[in-house]
Image (tube, rainbow, N blue to C red; front, side, top):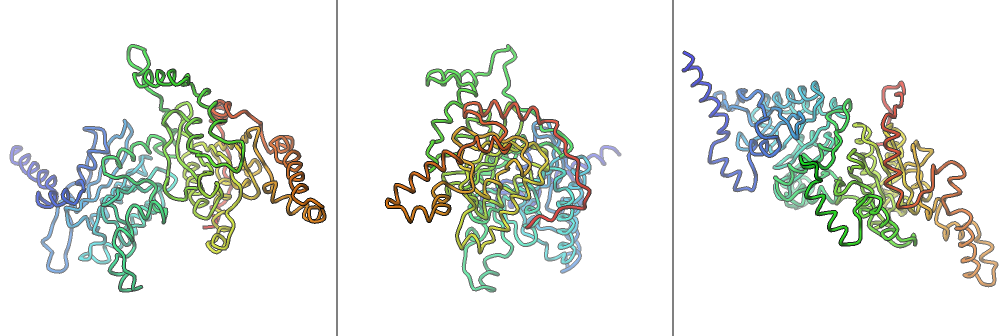
Length: 539
């Protein structure tokens, strides 16, 4: 009897593992995509994945398809370990009914969402679906609603990561949109509310699928996706890397990551090679010495641009910075890094784009990242070199007031440790928005050449001394004299420090050391919650 029962179980398991059959698996591979199970194998530590609800079958009762019963119903759900940490997953299977979402398909996803929420562990939702299952009608639409509800309930409680490795259209787009982060793979990942045919019919606009909702569009123009990769293997490595910076839930601490040493006690080969290279190049390789390069990277002339990524590289642990939305709103840089192995979130102005000004897209990008870090108790380090909120009718008409207010709100609301470093310019309302002292910053450092003022010296002089300049015999000489006088009297960090708006003026090469000490001091920071239902962020 046991032999027959076990044989039946083996046959059912074999049928489940075959998914849509060899022909459809081959078609999936020919289209440049992995299967649902191959994706899970890339994600999880070997031998740790446990499937849940694998015997559930689809139920299609209409259109004469009442006998259609497909094991798994087009989605694989379960849990396993990623770098030793428990993580939950749903992976849609395009080889089974096109990965379309029906009643039981959605039930499997909502169950795994509930498990992740109850266990306070991250969830990864892999999207590769033909959308709502037409044959199941309202049951399919209801299934999406249940997923969205759980996405919202889990928001800020556990990390939620969406991976787009196939079509994701219509209502299906909104589950990834509610998640914390979206990963897309170029060429195969597609996201749009309505497809090209509907767009052509309704608004008489012709476009390809890639032009409408490809990875490049969402990475550079819409800002919908946070990470874009050329192939699935790189993408899933990126997912695992992101998880290393985040805790399993807001209740848990982020693991400290340090370079491993060999069992003999000698430092790693990688470390030794790096040290040798640095010695040959005249650098000792220490963090302090790397910070000594900051005065070479950042010009003392505030009109000259530089790449803030080079500054971040010197401040963070080697090769630890992981940029978020790197191709969108390039005037603002956000991402995760480490100092002494501990995770931090970085928000920085990028002088290489729009001179580091804040625009409506950059404000949105920063505000979302700030709130994500605050959700999961990741400290914030803010690198300030900002001339203004971007002026112009295009910005005003796009609602820069509303978008900029999101950034102000996000910094003000955040209760995690918040440290700012004013490197050069900090002008006007943009200075306030970049985590100023009175906005709740715990520590504000300024470099000796920092300029903290309502606006640049030239603009201030042209307004404040307009009459004196016009009445002068040599207008240019008078203007230059007044500009220099204004800079000496007002545009230096010591004025702000004397009034308590700057905690300390530091040398650039002291930056990493000061940040490390401040982060250590602030690690147990606690702020009592305000008794209210919730705030009303200007969305």
